[in-house]
Length: 346
Ligand code: ATP
Image (cartoon, rainbow, N blue to C red):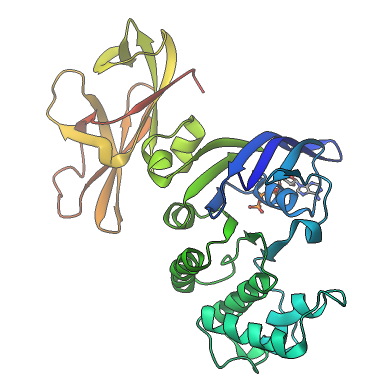
């Protein structure tokens, strides 16, 4: 195992930012830490980096307990959202900076540092820009230079905190693809923080979903999307609706009537989660959920129909084809094709 976070708790002035977090990362993996604002992503990244230290628990790098080690001893490379390039230095000097400040004896010769900077400029696909200053680069180019600078020290691990956060959508997309290719070429163990689920699911080998200082689920994109482990993951990833239901003798009841869905959950209140494309519009048939259409909106290539169902007027969203204009008003009936039940009233 390359990095092993073991039962880490982190408090800031007794406020717990992380509770009992454990995570194993393999050598060469590209990992996304995904979660809403304040969920503890940056704190976890900074603990792995050695910029913060755990209140409890340990962090191993390989077989070594690195919990008390400094950033330098851990040999990590960083990139932050606001590319902090040195404004008065050229691109080549920026990239070579980490090598040029090494103590005498371990510091490569000037020519060697330059050679390495030029090599990295090729790798980040910006050859020929070595003598420019940061102000002469676009945002996306600066961010690539920041990555080259982090790679120059040949880090054991690369840590990226919202590396593309400040850029516009199109540039973000391009850089995302580019980062994946770069990672596949260099094989660095890489951990990046994002609150953008599309970025996490598209780019990472495995995604770590966090909420309120805890890890909710760790998995590949398919697991996270198709097999969400907790109600939080289900509602945080993709679109979904939640129906308050009751489980009675293996049957799911909504508003007192059975939906014809089998449940293995214990009797009692539960929440039924369903995605808009997993709700099928049907005739009045038995067990269907009926509701009044309240809003219809276009979402890219499809149309989303929102209904209010049951006495509590629970909102459900149904995906239909964009050219299907037969369900835009009145009462409709739907049946979940795929769903997931979580026990408890929530
Ligand atoms: P964002 O996406 O907004 O950056 P995040 O998931 O990265 O959020 P963290 O920055 O890790 O979240 O913060 C987790 C919690 O810890 C927050 O409630 C934050 O206010 C708190 N916190 C983080 N750093 C400190 C600090 N230095 N002192 C006190 N509280 C802190």
